[in-house]
Image 1 (cartoon, rainbow, N blue to C red):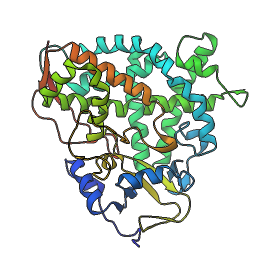
Image 2 (cartoon, one colour):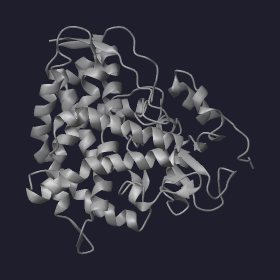
Image 3 (cartoon, helix red, strand yellow):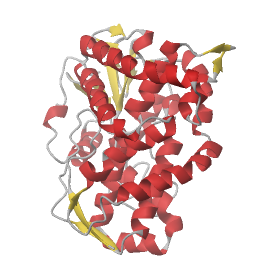
Length: 389
């Protein structure tokens, strides 16, 4: 068996083509150890197996061997069963099919407005002009918060990301205090004057017959604000870049808009917006013959699993119409993305509206080969396109 003291790979030295690096790790060393991430699993079957075993692989955030206090964890993502199930059942109606259908016209109006930044006819930076602000503004629309807060939310989310990456408990505590200072006045305002938004909806919910506490409200809203936009920004960047570089695919989707949802799923399988997420071993165990010790971190490398040729024929090709397509873009197991219905709706509406508002769009220069962008670093680099109306 392999020992955790041996560093099999260094995530900081993957180079610019991360997809190629993940593909190589999956084929040559599918379970690997690094000082930075602990154990990493790259094959589809191993990722799914770890995700399906929350008793052995906990999702509670750990900093230097200590579990984060409950008040500093995001509900429901950073809780294990049975607490996780209670909170997730409570929140699932927020992203129900009915609520998403009712929200779609507001989302479409926001997309039509924000896409004007891309359709000037001049070279426009996709991330800075559209993909960065739009998903945050969608979350603000859902929660009923000012759209202009998107820059503050983006900056605060980055503080949390850095604190998590560095496992800096003091920085994380400071970020959480800042979030509470931001969120609590909004809660007070909605208590006094409810509105037709998700924040007021949360205030009406009960858990085991009791209203949510302010600590629970802050935790839920903080997670929605932090986790609800980063991967969508990366997804928009991936989709627009791919189609700008493949005009034939643009034309196919313009002439067959019903194919847009499945095309989105395949583009994101092919170039995942989220590299992976971590778990912590709750007991001594093993993964494919590798000894994993209680307390070891285990990274589920979704981006590598999504290109596993054992599951996806021609995995390195973006195959529109792929069926079945059992990708892990939105995770796997009990912690699969709660907000995936909103993310899918956003991406479908944006792509539909962009194709309808243009005759073509093309790259102005090259796209940096830094994919996936969201984890463990945040190196999503901008690129420009020219849209012809």
